[in-house]
Image 1 (cartoon, rainbow, N blue to C red):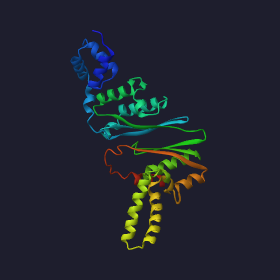
Image 2 (spheres, one colour; image 1 turned 180 degrees about the vertical axis):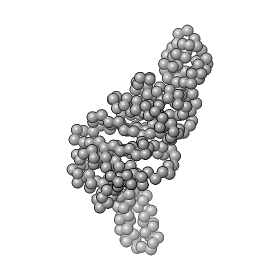
Image 3 (cartoon, rainbow, N blue to C red; image 1 turned 45 degrees about the horizontal axis):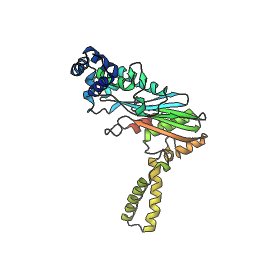
Length: 292
């Protein structure tokens, strides 16, 4: 029986297996869809489809650089043990380098990129079946810089945190310092201008209510609020934070003193938003920085 593209598509949707595996399964079973599903399950290829409901919040973040192009990405697994497996790290490198060498710029586009083991999507499905845990490419960002700009990358906890910075001017060492700062201090934004007006308004209202509850007159309370908002920016905005190696200056001033400006900073922490993490990453990174 002839195996058609629509049959392959249907089997892929049923099992989550790769296109070539589905085609082979249908050929081996003379086009019998149910028998093809069983064939894939017997080979362990369709197991991955059953794992879609599981939470994969462990894994690794990594950065790949080549010339003026960089890719930062996060690939997840269900357990930390698997993320240290050579099979997993090899898959991570394959995905990262494939995206780096391509022209795609989005997560959606990346899944269709070809590797030596099928598309990136096929690769993840195959490794999920082989390793026995749900694996997923959760997020990525492709960054292109100009010739007068530099990349600075930093990893902590073996890839649990990855930070990519882009500076105009300065040098890679300064850019790395910025990335280390971001890893340690977990800024929510890079610049004051990045903070949504709704966030500022909410904080201003909270601080005004607090000042008024302390018995301060309205005009004094207003001045106190503005001062507290500036302090708030120093906590949540990377550029305004006191620089870890010299608390007398801000991160932006440190970069400026080294003839540069901050253009972009991307920080990935594995499992961010998927589960609460209790490790004190900030303290560990700060100790490492101060020891340099």
